Length: 227
Image 1 (spheres, rainbow, N blue to C red):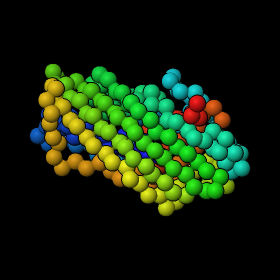
Image 2: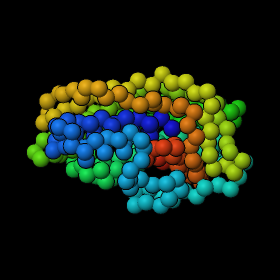
Image 3: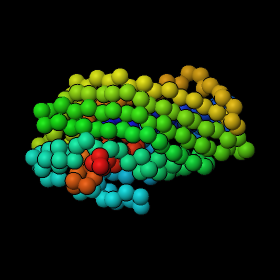
């Protein structure tokens, strides 16, 4: 899904900012390791696996076959991402990387529509704000993600993997960085490819919720039917 890829972009930018302005500056190997871990989608994380119980999200049981998974996906569509769950995952992830996170907030909407003809679309309008305190320096990253993505989809035989195919996106991503309230820039950082990019997703669905996790992402998204 679009969210995890974009959040990894936010992770890279935040960790780079910490490396440039905090104790890890001047080539500190710890800062370099943190940036590398975020860029690879690996390293320590407190995120959930699809279908795993956590303090802030219900457990969603994986389905046993493609027919059941397809029925669940279509019955709940359109799906709306649960931003509070994603914000909590981000906060735990940044903290696990040794950053003093004072707040993470994700505002807006992301809507996934799954159609029975094998097509799907995502409309994203999200603003993520991350605040980090580092030895008296307050760093704030504001990332805005807006735009559509659409393409085809199919399921693995066991219904556990959602496989997007031929997706295109018009998603726009902007980043603002503030140090002690003053606008700043981090040179040389690029947000990774965002939106659906044909990366398979592990899924679990029970009708009330849909849980998805993109390969190589430390985050996953919890969705519920649009009310």
